[in-house]
Image 1 (cartoon, rainbow, N blue to C red):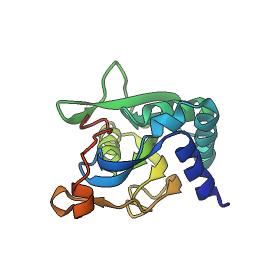
Image 2 (image 1 turned 135 degrees about the horizontal axis):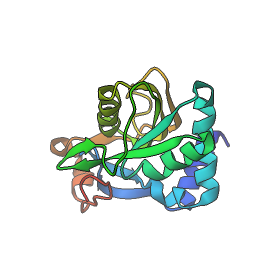
Image 3 (image 1 turned 90 degrees about the vertical axis):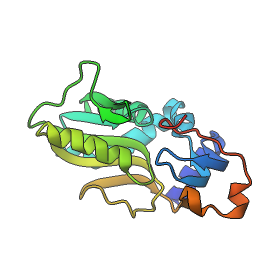
Image 4 (image 1 turned 60 degrees about the horizontal axis):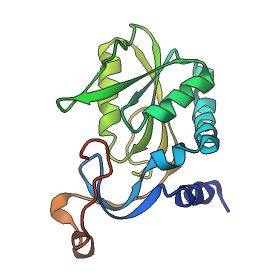
Length: 191
């Protein structure tokens, strides 16, 4: 069994890989959904996945880890623990990603962005804009699940633990069999 299959089995065994009709955080529809929080609640998996991301970026020596809330917060915090870095998160207010709670990105800081799942990369792009507007340096992006199968290229130093070709659809292009299933909205933006 290869590493991808092992990770998929971990997702299935923890109930993190769901099947049905889902509206993703991106607004797209899919027959599958990764509820990463269900796998990350288990310390052994949270630590293992965080170490994988931390190992990828350790030599770049980040000063700061930032994650989009809510999904990336737990993973980002543990990656920060593994790297010994200050860790913050950005969150939505009135539909826009912002820095709150007294957090700050300092000019010139070397920043690693950590996210649990990307489909279109929209939330990560918004966080990248926040980092750039603070005149800080983006070292890279660490992701647990890349649902785009690597087609979303956000940064030259982008690392995903697992890349999947998870099919998603625009609301107007749903296949008949998916359209007949009641919609679930487990993502943080639309729930």
